Image 1 (cartoon, rainbow, N blue to C red):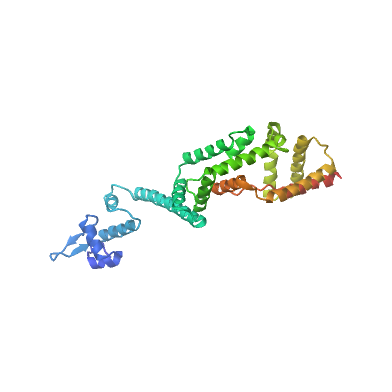
Image 2 (tube, helix red, strand yellow):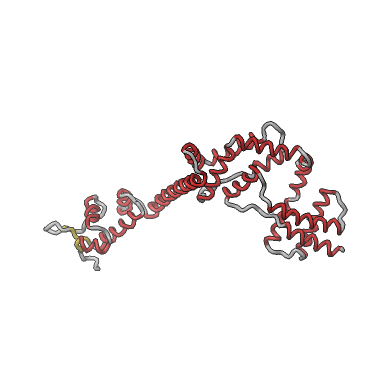
Length: 322
């Protein structure tokens, strides 16, 4: 193919993969005009025109409009600008498709009514501000009519769903279920009764008291150190493992006021193993489901505390002191 050669429209169609009718249409629309026309009216195209037609075909595959293509070919818009525009449109279409998929999946799973489908579509399309407002209204109602410990209420409100800008269908499905859960007056009432009973009966007043909550919060750094060490596969009986166990025991002794004895450490190691068994049990009721859905919406796995690792580390310090 030489720069000065001219090609009939049939040859151009074979070279570009475009139909003859499409090439004529682009010529009539002023997108790519022929380089010449024979006395008999046959349209002839040069190498430059063929290259422009190949670009037109590529851009049409990306759903670019004729006006946009004309602007690119005329040098009034760059390919980068066109790509950015169409990428944004494509992302918007993908977001809509994910929303529809989430709603349809929820319909199939829950055998929803027409009214419920309308509600689910509305919930899936909420803005960040609307989602935050719904969660705030939920916790305000749950905490109305009694006086929950301020710090606990703060923790409840902080553990909230944050739907990312580009959520997966699974995250959207989790949000739809969560939004319906927190919008249910019966759920709000039941959770209020459960939390009030937990905080005001039995050991609840002591465990939810401000000094106890502050003390539990103070254990955050040692708890995180324990999680990090277990995640990094630090041996429980290593110097670092024993140091963490000593820090943990010092914190626990500050809580219970017990003497730091070998027996106490062995008993605490046993309590850690019992805690592992307890932690494997899902939190019952609406609060447990709320937590599961928040994690699903946020796309994170809940942090599992390494009770077994800590039990081994505490037992290693007890064996050394024995």
